[in-house]
Amino acid sequence: MNLRQLLVVIDPSQPSQPALQRAQWLARATGAKIELLLCEYNSALEHSVLFDQETLTKGRSSLLEELQADLEATAQPLREQGLEVSVQVRWGKRTEQLILQRVNELQPDLVFKSSHHHGPLKRLLFGNSSWQLLRDCPAPLWLVQHGDWQSRSLCAALDPLHSADKPAVLDQQLIEAAKLLSAALEMPAQYLHCYPPLPPSLLFDTQLINDYEHYNQVCAEQHRTAFEQLLQAADVPLDSATLLHGFAEQELPRYVREQGIDLLLMGAISRSHLANALIGNTAERVLEAVECDVLVLKPQPQAVSSAVE
Image: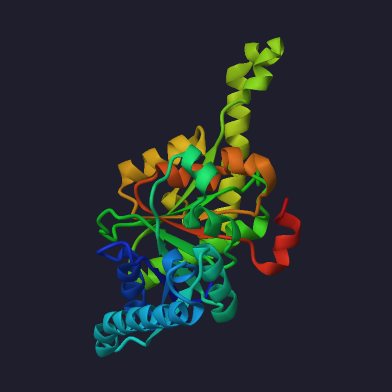
Protein backbone atom coordinates (compact mmCIF):
# COMPACT_ATOMS: atom_id res chain seq x y z
CA MET A 1 0.00 0.00 0.00
CA ASN A 2 1.36 3.39 -1.07
CA LEU A 3 0.35 6.84 0.09
CA ARG A 4 1.19 9.11 -2.84
CA GLN A 5 -2.22 10.07 -4.26
CA LEU A 6 -5.47 10.57 -2.33
CA LEU A 7 -8.91 11.06 -3.89
CA VAL A 8 -11.52 12.84 -1.78
CA VAL A 9 -15.19 12.71 -2.76
CA ILE A 10 -16.77 16.03 -1.82
CA ASP A 11 -20.44 15.97 -0.77
CA PRO A 12 -22.02 19.26 -1.90
CA SER A 13 -25.14 18.56 0.19
CA GLN A 14 -23.21 18.68 3.49
CA PRO A 15 -21.88 21.81 5.26
CA SER A 16 -18.80 19.98 6.56
CA GLN A 17 -16.43 17.62 4.77
CA PRO A 18 -14.97 15.12 7.28
CA ALA A 19 -13.54 13.06 4.42
CA LEU A 20 -11.40 16.03 3.41
CA GLN A 21 -10.34 16.58 7.02
CA ARG A 22 -9.05 13.00 7.22
CA ALA A 23 -7.26 13.21 3.87
CA GLN A 24 -5.72 16.56 4.77
CA TRP A 25 -4.38 15.11 8.00
CA LEU A 26 -2.93 12.09 6.23
CA ALA A 27 -1.40 14.22 3.46
CA ARG A 28 0.39 16.39 6.00
CA ALA A 29 1.93 13.29 7.55
CA THR A 30 2.92 11.59 4.29
CA GLY A 31 3.31 14.29 1.62
CA ALA A 32 0.59 12.67 -0.51
CA LYS A 33 -1.18 14.63 -3.22
CA ILE A 34 -4.92 15.28 -2.86
CA GLU A 35 -7.58 15.51 -5.53
CA LEU A 36 -11.03 16.85 -4.68
CA LEU A 37 -13.81 15.28 -6.74
CA LEU A 38 -17.31 16.73 -6.83
CA CYS A 39 -20.07 14.97 -8.77
CA GLU A 40 -23.16 16.99 -9.69
CA TYR A 41 -26.44 16.30 -11.44
CA ASN A 42 -29.65 18.29 -11.73
CA SER A 43 -32.44 16.81 -13.83
CA ALA A 44 -33.84 20.30 -14.50
CA LEU A 45 -30.68 21.04 -16.50
CA GLU A 46 -30.82 17.77 -18.41
CA HIS A 47 -34.33 17.76 -19.87
CA SER A 48 -36.89 20.56 -19.91
CA VAL A 49 -39.98 21.53 -21.91
CA LEU A 50 -39.28 25.20 -21.21
CA PHE A 51 -35.74 25.52 -22.57
CA ASP A 52 -33.96 24.31 -25.68
CA GLN A 53 -30.86 22.11 -25.55
CA GLU A 54 -28.46 24.99 -26.10
CA THR A 55 -29.87 26.85 -23.09
CA LEU A 56 -29.65 23.71 -20.94
CA THR A 57 -26.04 23.16 -22.03
CA LYS A 58 -25.12 26.72 -21.08
CA GLY A 59 -26.89 26.28 -17.73
CA ARG A 60 -24.91 23.11 -16.97
CA SER A 61 -21.66 24.78 -17.97
CA SER A 62 -22.40 27.75 -15.74
CA LEU A 63 -23.20 25.51 -12.78
CA LEU A 64 -20.06 23.41 -13.26
CA GLU A 65 -17.90 26.55 -13.50
CA GLU A 66 -19.41 27.79 -10.25
CA LEU A 67 -18.74 24.46 -8.52
CA GLN A 68 -15.20 24.43 -9.93
CA ALA A 69 -14.60 27.87 -8.44
CA ASP A 70 -15.99 26.69 -5.08
CA LEU A 71 -13.63 23.70 -5.09
CA GLU A 72 -10.68 25.94 -5.96
CA ALA A 73 -11.61 28.12 -2.99
CA THR A 74 -11.65 25.02 -0.79
CA ALA A 75 -8.29 23.87 -2.14
CA GLN A 76 -6.47 27.20 -1.85
CA PRO A 77 -5.97 27.21 1.97
CA LEU A 78 -4.59 23.67 1.73
CA ARG A 79 -2.14 24.74 -0.97
CA GLU A 80 -1.04 27.62 1.23
CA GLN A 81 -0.20 25.01 3.88
CA GLY A 82 2.14 23.32 1.40
CA LEU A 83 -0.17 20.54 0.21
CA GLU A 84 -0.49 19.68 -3.48
CA VAL A 85 -4.22 19.80 -4.26
CA SER A 86 -6.07 19.47 -7.56
CA VAL A 87 -9.82 19.66 -8.22
CA GLN A 88 -12.19 17.84 -10.54
CA VAL A 89 -15.92 18.38 -11.23
CA ARG A 90 -17.98 15.76 -13.06
CA TRP A 91 -21.56 15.82 -14.34
CA GLY A 92 -23.70 12.70 -14.24
CA LYS A 93 -26.68 11.00 -12.66
CA ARG A 94 -24.87 8.00 -11.19
CA THR A 95 -22.45 9.38 -8.61
CA GLU A 96 -20.80 6.03 -7.91
CA GLN A 97 -20.11 5.48 -11.60
CA LEU A 98 -18.47 8.90 -11.91
CA ILE A 99 -16.33 8.15 -8.86
CA LEU A 100 -15.29 4.76 -10.21
CA GLN A 101 -14.47 6.33 -13.56
CA ARG A 102 -12.16 8.83 -11.89
CA VAL A 103 -10.61 6.11 -9.72
CA ASN A 104 -9.72 4.16 -12.88
CA GLU A 105 -8.22 7.29 -14.45
CA LEU A 106 -6.30 8.62 -11.44
CA GLN A 107 -5.36 5.27 -9.82
CA PRO A 108 -5.35 6.76 -6.29
CA ASP A 109 -3.82 4.94 -3.36
CA LEU A 110 -6.79 5.83 -1.14
CA VAL A 111 -10.34 7.04 -1.76
CA PHE A 112 -12.02 9.05 1.01
CA LYS A 113 -15.79 9.37 1.21
CA SER A 114 -18.20 10.39 3.93
CA SER A 115 -20.68 7.63 4.69
CA HIS A 116 -24.28 7.86 5.83
CA HIS A 117 -26.19 5.08 7.57
CA HIS A 118 -29.05 3.57 5.60
CA GLY A 119 -31.34 0.73 6.65
CA PRO A 120 -31.23 -2.52 4.64
CA LEU A 121 -34.59 -1.88 2.96
CA LYS A 122 -33.57 1.54 1.72
CA ARG A 123 -30.21 0.16 0.60
CA LEU A 124 -31.95 -2.59 -1.37
CA LEU A 125 -34.61 -0.43 -3.00
CA PHE A 126 -32.77 2.79 -3.72
CA GLY A 127 -29.10 1.94 -3.63
CA ASN A 128 -26.39 4.15 -2.19
CA SER A 129 -23.05 5.29 -3.56
CA SER A 130 -21.15 4.20 -0.44
CA TRP A 131 -22.46 0.65 -0.75
CA GLN A 132 -21.75 0.53 -4.46
CA LEU A 133 -18.21 1.75 -3.90
CA LEU A 134 -17.76 -0.78 -1.12
CA ARG A 135 -18.47 -3.52 -3.66
CA ASP A 136 -16.83 -2.10 -6.78
CA CYS A 137 -14.03 0.33 -5.89
CA PRO A 138 -10.66 -1.31 -6.69
CA ALA A 139 -8.71 1.16 -4.54
CA PRO A 140 -8.72 1.09 -0.73
CA LEU A 141 -11.84 2.94 0.43
CA TRP A 142 -11.82 5.04 3.61
CA LEU A 143 -15.43 5.58 4.65
CA VAL A 144 -15.61 8.47 7.09
CA GLN A 145 -18.19 8.66 9.84
CA HIS A 146 -19.40 12.05 11.03
CA GLY A 147 -18.32 11.49 14.64
CA ASP A 148 -15.39 13.25 16.24
CA TRP A 149 -11.93 12.05 15.21
CA GLN A 150 -9.56 11.63 18.14
CA SER A 151 -6.73 9.61 16.49
CA ARG A 152 -6.49 7.24 19.44
CA SER A 153 -5.81 3.89 17.77
CA LEU A 154 -6.54 1.81 14.69
CA CYS A 155 -7.44 -1.85 14.39
CA ALA A 156 -7.11 -4.39 11.57
CA ALA A 157 -9.74 -7.16 11.49
CA LEU A 158 -8.10 -10.34 10.17
CA ASP A 159 -9.35 -13.73 8.98
CA PRO A 160 -6.40 -16.17 9.22
CA LEU A 161 -8.50 -19.26 8.39
CA HIS A 162 -10.18 -17.47 5.45
CA SER A 163 -13.60 -18.59 6.67
CA ALA A 164 -15.16 -15.69 4.76
CA ASP A 165 -13.57 -16.88 1.49
CA LYS A 166 -10.94 -14.15 1.65
CA PRO A 167 -7.56 -15.00 0.10
CA ALA A 168 -4.54 -15.18 2.41
CA VAL A 169 -2.90 -12.21 0.69
CA LEU A 170 -5.68 -9.93 1.92
CA ASP A 171 -4.67 -10.39 5.57
CA GLN A 172 -1.11 -9.51 4.60
CA GLN A 173 -2.35 -6.34 2.89
CA LEU A 174 -4.32 -5.38 6.00
CA ILE A 175 -1.32 -5.88 8.27
CA GLU A 176 0.91 -3.88 5.93
CA ALA A 177 -1.63 -1.07 5.75
CA ALA A 178 -2.08 -1.03 9.53
CA LYS A 179 1.69 -0.79 10.05
CA LEU A 180 2.02 1.99 7.47
CA LEU A 181 -0.82 4.09 8.85
CA SER A 182 0.24 3.47 12.44
CA ALA A 183 3.71 4.82 11.69
CA ALA A 184 2.55 7.72 9.53
CA LEU A 185 -0.22 8.88 11.84
CA GLU A 186 1.43 7.92 15.14
CA MET A 187 -1.56 5.80 16.14
CA PRO A 188 -1.03 2.47 17.92
CA ALA A 189 -2.23 -0.49 15.86
CA GLN A 190 -4.27 -3.39 17.17
CA TYR A 191 -5.02 -6.66 15.39
CA LEU A 192 -8.28 -8.51 15.84
CA HIS A 193 -9.68 -11.86 14.77
CA CYS A 194 -13.31 -12.74 15.46
CA TYR A 195 -14.53 -16.28 14.82
CA PRO A 196 -18.20 -17.30 14.78
CA PRO A 197 -19.99 -19.64 17.22
CA LEU A 198 -21.22 -23.12 16.39
CA PRO A 199 -23.46 -22.99 13.28
CA PRO A 200 -27.12 -23.50 14.24
CA SER A 201 -27.48 -26.26 11.65
CA LEU A 202 -25.07 -28.44 13.64
CA LEU A 203 -27.09 -28.22 16.85
CA PHE A 204 -29.25 -31.08 15.60
CA ASP A 205 -26.26 -33.39 15.99
CA THR A 206 -26.80 -35.01 19.44
CA GLN A 207 -23.20 -36.14 19.82
CA LEU A 208 -21.92 -32.67 18.99
CA ILE A 209 -24.28 -31.07 21.50
CA ASN A 210 -23.12 -33.42 24.24
CA ASP A 211 -19.51 -32.51 23.54
CA TYR A 212 -20.13 -28.83 22.94
CA GLU A 213 -17.48 -27.51 25.36
CA HIS A 214 -14.81 -29.74 23.87
CA TYR A 215 -15.75 -28.56 20.39
CA ASN A 216 -15.48 -24.94 21.52
CA GLN A 217 -12.03 -25.54 22.99
CA VAL A 218 -10.75 -27.23 19.84
CA CYS A 219 -12.25 -24.52 17.64
CA ALA A 220 -10.80 -21.71 19.79
CA GLU A 221 -7.34 -23.32 19.75
CA GLN A 222 -7.46 -23.72 15.98
CA HIS A 223 -8.28 -20.05 15.47
CA ARG A 224 -5.78 -18.89 18.08
CA THR A 225 -2.96 -20.90 16.51
CA ALA A 226 -3.71 -19.64 13.01
CA PHE A 227 -4.03 -16.05 14.26
CA GLU A 228 -0.74 -16.13 16.15
CA GLN A 229 1.10 -17.77 13.26
CA LEU A 230 -0.15 -15.06 10.90
CA LEU A 231 1.00 -12.27 13.22
CA GLN A 232 4.37 -13.87 13.98
CA ALA A 233 5.08 -14.30 10.27
CA ALA A 234 4.34 -10.58 9.82
CA ASP A 235 6.51 -9.61 12.81
CA VAL A 236 3.54 -8.27 14.76
CA PRO A 237 3.80 -8.43 18.58
CA LEU A 238 1.19 -10.75 20.08
CA ASP A 239 0.39 -8.30 22.86
CA SER A 240 -1.32 -6.12 20.25
CA ALA A 241 -3.64 -9.00 19.22
CA THR A 242 -7.16 -9.85 20.42
CA LEU A 243 -9.16 -13.01 19.68
CA LEU A 244 -12.95 -12.73 19.96
CA HIS A 245 -15.65 -15.40 19.81
CA GLY A 246 -18.94 -14.35 18.25
CA PHE A 247 -20.48 -12.84 15.15
CA ALA A 248 -18.33 -10.11 13.61
CA GLU A 249 -21.25 -7.71 13.09
CA GLN A 250 -21.88 -7.84 16.86
CA GLU A 251 -18.41 -8.23 18.36
CA LEU A 252 -16.47 -5.78 16.18
CA PRO A 253 -18.71 -2.77 16.91
CA ARG A 254 -18.61 -3.59 20.64
CA TYR A 255 -14.81 -3.90 20.59
CA VAL A 256 -14.45 -0.66 18.61
CA ARG A 257 -16.63 1.17 21.10
CA GLU A 258 -14.99 -0.24 24.25
CA GLN A 259 -11.40 0.15 23.02
CA GLY A 260 -11.80 3.63 21.56
CA ILE A 261 -10.89 2.63 18.00
CA ASP A 262 -11.01 5.49 15.50
CA LEU A 263 -10.17 3.52 12.34
CA LEU A 264 -11.14 -0.09 11.58
CA LEU A 265 -9.37 -1.81 8.68
CA MET A 266 -11.32 -4.60 7.00
CA GLY A 267 -10.91 -6.81 3.96
CA ALA A 268 -13.69 -7.41 1.46
CA ILE A 269 -14.03 -9.50 -1.67
CA SER A 270 -16.35 -8.94 -4.59
CA ARG A 271 -19.68 -10.66 -4.16
CA SER A 272 -22.56 -10.52 -6.57
CA HIS A 273 -26.13 -11.36 -7.49
CA LEU A 274 -29.27 -11.40 -5.38
CA ALA A 275 -27.91 -12.91 -2.15
CA ASN A 276 -25.55 -9.99 -1.69
CA ALA A 277 -28.25 -7.44 -2.47
CA LEU A 278 -30.56 -8.92 0.15
CA ILE A 279 -28.29 -9.64 3.09
CA GLY A 280 -24.97 -8.01 2.26
CA ASN A 281 -21.61 -9.35 3.36
CA THR A 282 -19.80 -9.08 6.67
CA ALA A 283 -18.07 -5.79 5.79
CA GLU A 284 -21.41 -4.17 4.99
CA ARG A 285 -23.10 -5.39 8.17
CA VAL A 286 -20.19 -4.24 10.31
CA LEU A 287 -20.15 -0.87 8.60
CA GLU A 288 -23.81 -0.38 9.48
CA ALA A 289 -23.03 -0.96 13.17
CA VAL A 290 -19.62 0.57 13.92
CA GLU A 291 -19.23 4.15 15.10
CA CYS A 292 -15.76 4.78 13.69
CA ASP A 293 -14.13 5.25 10.29
CA VAL A 294 -13.72 2.09 8.22
CA LEU A 295 -10.94 1.46 5.70
CA VAL A 296 -11.90 -1.34 3.29
CA LEU A 297 -9.22 -3.10 1.27
CA LYS A 298 -9.71 -5.47 -1.65
CA PRO A 299 -7.30 -8.16 -2.86
CA GLN A 300 -4.62 -6.88 -5.22
CA PRO A 301 -5.32 -7.54 -8.93
CA GLN A 302 -3.29 -10.74 -9.04
CA ALA A 303 -5.50 -12.21 -6.29
CA VAL A 304 -8.87 -10.97 -7.52
CA SER A 305 -9.56 -13.84 -9.90
CA SER A 306 -9.49 -16.34 -7.07
CA ALA A 307 -11.58 -14.17 -4.77
CA VAL A 308 -14.52 -13.14 -6.95
CA GLU A 309 -17.68 -15.20 -6.63
